[in-house]
Image 1 (spheres, helix red, strand yellow):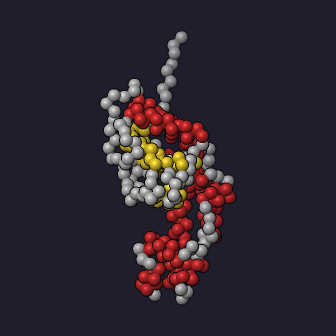
Image 2: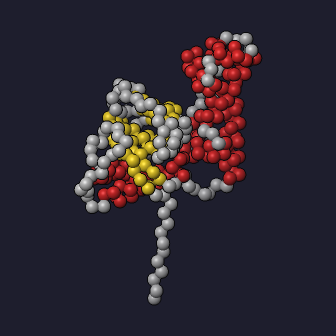
Image 3: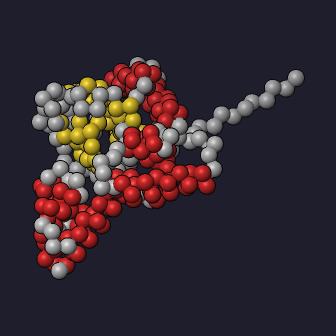
Length: 284
């Protein structure tokens, strides 16, 4: 009897690790926007962070993670009195599914937390300390535990495959037409309610999905993130009111449910490069 070998496919490969840190940030720590040609995973073990990136701006809470895409500008800021404990891993990967973790944070389950802890421990068999100081060039240990670099790669791949499975990425059980129909319904809901406060979690609940799947399918369908789409609707309406009405800027900000005139001015300038007053002067 002849035995037939079955080759095993590789759906995801980590091809390199840039850095692997476990930080306890000072309460006033923040970074300036940076971009680099590799993925960056940020996981909050305790405390919380404020994240700003091209794909997501908002809080990253305890047990949550986000993965910044390659070459996207991102930064972080500590916003509480508590010193947050944070894991940051820069890595190269050949799977585009990793992009799915960039539009919004995910909450890691118990097994995922155990897996990322193993990644950190194995990383200390590979790299020379210190592990809590930012560096662009982590040095490898000259004497390593047998197989430690391979184990580090395997453990990180294991973690990434696990969270892809948990979040439902890579499934092929939905037809494109069903997805497009759902996205069109979500767009209509946003179009009708963009002046009201809404969250991605709320939309995911209303349309019977999870936030990661919602964010990925929305971007795949529209070419922009949900945050970008909502901000675009708010800006279009704000600029129309500034051009066509004689209401004060403060009144427009209040009617559009902005928390303050300061926040409205900051939002408008970020979207247009001008303050509301400058925009009105130029367009009336």
